Length: 218
Image (cartoon, rainbow, N blue to C red; front, side, top):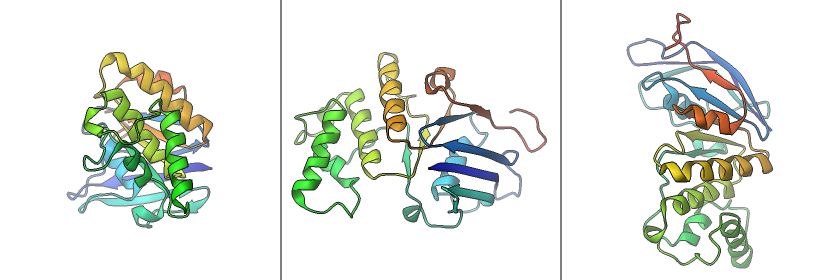
């Protein structure tokens, strides 16, 4: 699997490009980091890749998954997972049911689906917490549960939007190690945007800086 961007560029409603055309390849199991200050368009870039680009923006270039052009497919047809700054879990569902929400429709049978959830909970260090209220979890536990829910959907690629920025400093190293170990073991091509150089160092992959259309680093 690989995630490829070919001369990807985004223009705002005023017609101005947010950044210079971006071309890169994210191989299976690798984490490529995109860095740049607030306002340069990092989160908008992820929205475009995932199929969530807001009205008013215009996209040019191509997004390819395993050689397949998905640029104009709806988000639900792309199989691209997205992790935000906040570990958002559905408050009306138990921890286990939150993870089950991410299971692909092709996994049928109550016993098989429950087994998949229990295995994911164990991998996340949350064994025995299937029936817990998400509100009772610590920040680190919520972050691990949210990541496992995303991975259970079997994404062809994963996008990380400042995934560790709202964690306490003591949890960041733990979640970086947990996240990057899982995307590597599952061979998921992963693109991460961040302000934090420590995130990039922990990811261990290439680092790309967004630039203005004139070539000046923002």
